[in-house]
Length: 167
Image (cartoon, rainbow, N blue to C red; front, side, top):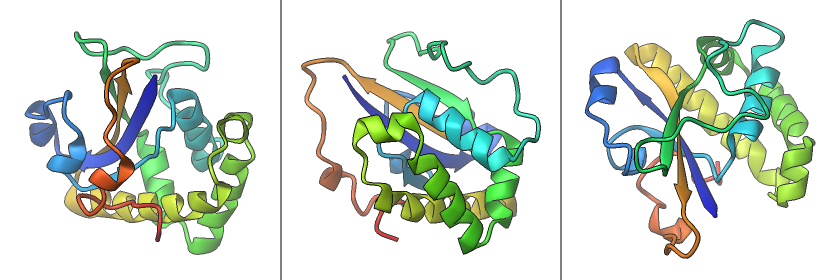
């Protein structure tokens, strides 16, 4: 199985119209999350929240995500404290979070190149600032491709959203 996990911002009205079977990159400011699963996202949220309260509505480490009726996607709202802290962070803080996140067991086991995480963190901070400036909320769209289904190559999404992982 292959995961997509894209961060995006939307207003409540825009979110109602969002077709969860399609990537948010087609209609919202988006940062491509490169397949982080909900456990990796929780690690990130905990790092960035810096000990402040995280909503209990987030799935716990051992829980599965609540998927749509087709069983292929879900939405997580990025906790407001995470959006706020990302928006306020300077480059040094973003680099510190990226290094800490890259050292978690999940990322190490996945073989994701740690050098790309600082770029992802900068893109997330930019998106958080845009969310705060427009009164939007930040979400993560997680899409699970079933085994055997053709997965579009990452190049197919380049140029359609922020967060190409290259700065």
